[in-house]
Length: 115
Image (tube, rainbow, N blue to C red; front, side, top):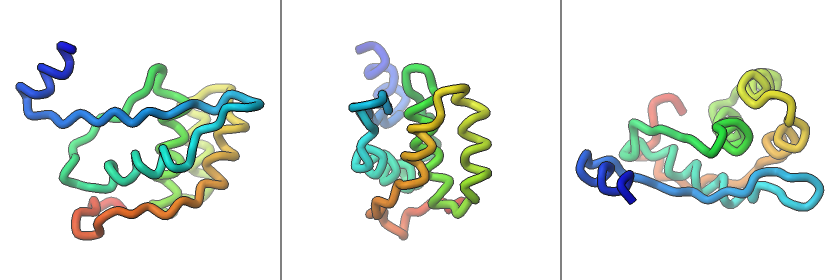
């Protein structure tokens, strides 16, 4: 709880976006979870932003990979960046990124300049 108090004192907004990781063969990241996280990321009123997960590799890698798709990066560049940080567990996550196609209902009035 002390993190929450510290965030309040420093006027930092904390968003907790729960997301399951890809664990073959039965557990997959839900596109809706990534969509919801992207809605928050694409609102510059929430910036600056720090994004992290337990190890900072796979779930975050999927989220950032989907963000890169929105930024019109090539799949080769997205996968290169993903592998640089995620290490060896890549196939299910890369497939998730490649097939991610949820519409992101963000407010264009508050979109960041880098989108």
